[in-house]
Length: 496
Image (cartoon, rainbow, N blue to C red; front, top):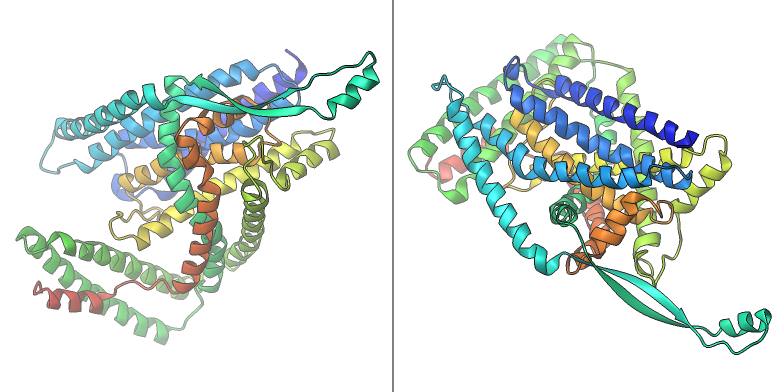
């Protein structure tokens, strides 16, 4: 192996360590004190899943650097990618659902964990059986990758090389397709990516515009110092709201236990939970404004700076998607190349400009890919507030239960596979010749029938980015039902 390969191996060892450390910090920062010294199985699964979602993004620039610097790890990375995504499929289909059901089946009246294990095993087995049948049955009909290529042919009649070259200018081209049966692991990943792409399109597209706007809102809505009189007045308002919400909560509980709450009225439970979360936020802001004098002075301006940086990255991402992936064609289509290489040229320029440190282009490549993954998480938070049938899983510092952590980490893991595929296709001009390029572009993106689904995603992301931009400003004040709205609804339904 050459020196470049040893450098890449060092980075390959450091990335898992950084990912595991980040996952431990993630749990410490968000986990609720109610789960202290308990729920160890969900904790371990969160560490593994969170680490793998980060590690999958970190592996991309490593693969790119190996290809561009002529490293000797191409074959090894090809195996690593397939094993890695095989584990992702197991986590998404089996392990994470089992952990969520295991946690939510906890019963204070049951001293044994067999009760939790029984229900978790039952529901996770159903998911596994259904998924295995769906993937296995469709494998024989769908798991064929149709790779486009061009054949150049011409009849040359010349006794000299110059004459042959001149006649070759009139060569004919034929567009053809090579059909290849993909492995079961690659096909299973493609099916998982169908769901992952849905998360990327909806949540990631929304997050592209919601993230910078939310950071700017955090700056504008930062706690400000208040005097004792104002604190007493607002405290009384919060107390009155909390007492009213307690009464509404008891009424909803009685209505649910007595069967008075119909299926179409279940949304009341979500509205009640949102109102409780909003009231708790109001109290935290009020407490910080009075007892801590408005809190940190520096932190809000960090949000302002990050808002500007994220705005620039989002705008560049949107421009790149438009110019490279939508007009006039798709980069995987041999008959219609992109109108402009955009960021691919930037990455190549950075590698050439920093010849002493040619990893710089790969690091910027990592920045844009990781940013898209963060947008998926931000978009997940926004979507869960607006779509009624989605469970509310807010991420709150030191106050997030394990089921919410599992839900968000599972979403992040699903989104990370789609982010990797989307970034590989979006930056195919820079990542050409890598192991992941062969996996995603030649393999998954070219699978029959599924390829059409993947081809429309750039347009769908732009659509949801526009929707997210409009909705973020429409919902600037984050209107949620308060205790008066809920009380009026309860009275209308004769539940109060």
